[in-house]
Length: 59
Image (cartoon, rainbow, N blue to C red; front, side, top):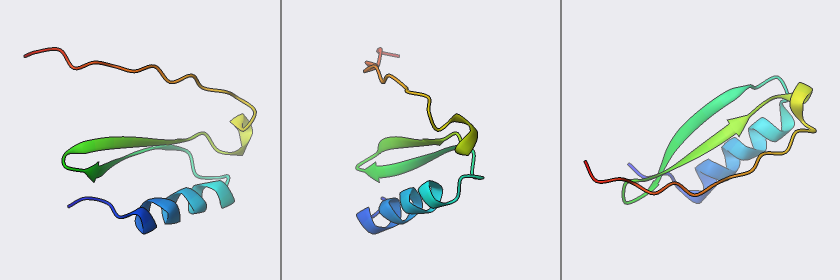
């Protein structure tokens, strides 16, 4: 089952307001595409992450 925008935004709001939540969660966002939400908690709030595209390689 794909995630709705409301569910995703609700989770994002939760982790932004509760700085004790740490870890990651993988969501199915649409047609088998996945999204990863990463939360480092309040201790690491000043860190910056760079995201690089990753291409799938043939099996």
